[in-house]
Image (tube, rainbow, N blue to C red; front, side, top):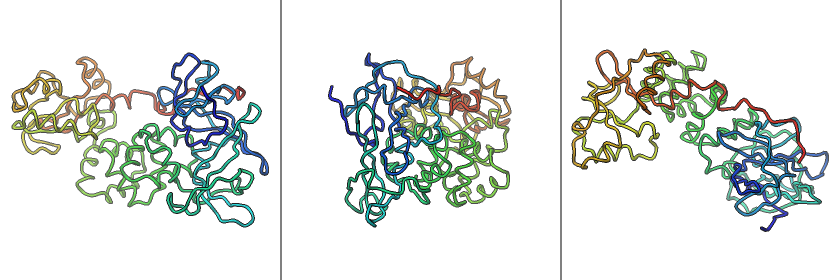
Length: 417
């Protein structure tokens, strides 16, 4: 294996980390450094590595033996699995230094940081190079490399940092992973990233964040933008978020949403959040009895459809928007796969498992799903009209501890290799 002694940090993002036995530890999400007084090169303390369950841990640079083009290798398989907490004086290179506005020497122009290079020197790593570009756009000028000592401005408070280059590094992250990256940032930096994301991407990320961070981010958006983001969210997630806000703020944003987008959310807000009505999504796959199996399969192939909602379709009499006409039954995708494409879905619906009432408690919903090994179950009103569906991930969000997205474990105090 060839060991790199100079590496640009953006190239590390997403690399797989392996222990000496070749077992995967996790993936690199950032590099932890400590900035030093004057123009001294910052010392690299270690890597921020994401392991299972979205937990981010600290791996000291002393444990890193090899950095290759597609992987990082450690000298030992023993690392602390305690959750990373950034200490005072520590800086995350990708999430805090990229997109900074700094100044070149001798009265040079103000430039934007697009990457930072680190170099191995006598068994320790230091930040030695800065890749910069004039202008804030990603393609307005050529990138140039300068020595860390030739740049000023990293120690100054940053007014409007932006996030274009950071998001370019993390553009392939899943929403849950990007939410994890944002969790360890300052309120200011989270707000800058939120401003740089489009509505759809921000909606997806918000759905994966703790509720207090959701509310805080939304409070930093202009009302019109916040309403647009709510429209891009699934109605049940939008209802959950609005339910955490001050009633006056929630009402104002609902009024700014398009009426047809706001109505499903208003319906969900009528139910307590620990009931089937409060847990359900109002947008399952709803079909009429005259739909063919081929048409049903085409609907559940949609790439944006969550797997638990794609597990079955719900057959009703018209109208087909919730609350629908009379609920007839469900058709599981496995059954659909066994039928000729021209078969009408009315011939394969299942009616042997009772739907839920909207006032059924969370405990009863959980028992119902577990008893029948279901990933989703319909919710109907007293007139047997379909209101929505509760999925197993909806239930998990409510039965897990409130801080499950953050993780309760903490990193041990050791910072040495």
